[in-house]
Length: 399
Image 1 (cartoon, one colour):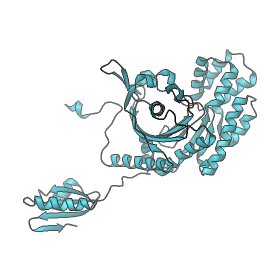
Image 2 (cartoon, helix red, strand yellow):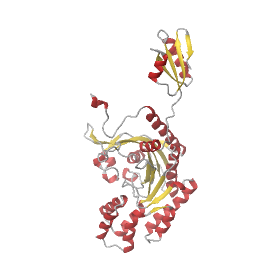
Image 3 (tube, rainbow, N blue to C red):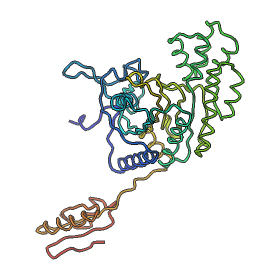
Image 4 (cartoon, helix red, strand yellow):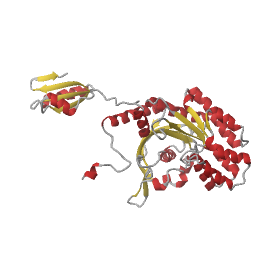
C-alpha cells in the first residue's frame, strides 16, 4: 500500500503554494503571448507515432512513451509540441497564406532514464508563427521570448542565438554526406573539439574550411563577433547566414531587448528540423535552458503544407525552479473569506456563503466543531482576510 502513495520516477505532485506559483506563472506567460496577438490551440496528449518518426528530426524513438490502440496503431505521448502543431495547421489551415500566430500550453513526455532527477513530464507554453519567413518574424519571436521571461519576473537571463544555415553551408562545401553532417553537427553542438578534429582528419578539405569547422564551437560572443567571422569565409550561403543574424540584431535593438542577446554559431539545436536561426534562454541556478526556439521551414511540408515557420517554447518547470532559487517568485494567494457555523445553523450559513460568492468573494464554509482558537490552528488562516460565524442568533464577525 505504501508504494501506491508515491509517484513513478520523473513525475511529481504539485500542491499548496507550489501549485499556486506554477499556475500564476503560466498566467503571466500566456498573457504575454496574447498581447503579441497569438491565439490558443490545443492538440491531443497522444498522437500517432509517425508524427514523431526519425525523419521529422524530433525526439529519438527510444525516449518516447509508446502504446498500442485497439486497431493496432502505435501511439505515443507527445514528446515535443512542434510536430503536432504542424500537423494541426496542415489540416485546418492548409490554404491559409497570411501569417498565423498560434500559442499553446501542454505537457510533454520524454523518458530521460539516463538523467536521474530529471522530470519526464514537463509543462511547455509556447508560440508558433507560420507563413512568415522574414528576418522581422525571427526578431518578433526572439523579442517575444525576452518579454515572456521579463513578465515571469526573471531579472537576469541571456538569449543565445545560432544559425543552422551557417554550418549547413560549410558542410555542403566540405562534401559531407547526410550521415557525416549529422555526426559533425552533434559533436559541434556538444563542443567536442577533439572528436571533430578526428572526423575531419580523414577528409581532404581546404585549410581555411577545416579551420572554420574546427573553430565553430568557439564562435560565440557579441554581434561584433559575427563581423569578424564573416572575413574568414567566401562561402555565399555562410555569409548570408551571418548577414541574417546581423540584420536580426538591428531589429532586436529596435525591440529594446538587445542587452539580453549573444550569438553562438556552434549552437545547432537539439532538433533536426531546425533550418535557420535557433536560440535558447539561460539563467543561473537552473543548470539547463528555461526556453528555446528556432526556425523550421521544412517541417510543415512533411504534413502537406509548404510554409515557413518559427516557434518558441518556455519550459515552465525549469523557469519556475530558477525563479524560486533566485527568490523572485511568491504564491500570491487570492484573499478568501471563511464562514464557520454551529450545528442547527446550517441553512443560515449556506445563505451567507452564497451571498458572498454571488458578490465574487472567495468564500469557504466550515462547521465549527471545537474551540475557535484550536480550530484556527488546525485549518490555518493564510490568505483569509475575513471570518464570519453563523449561529442560530445570527451572523457575527470574528476579526
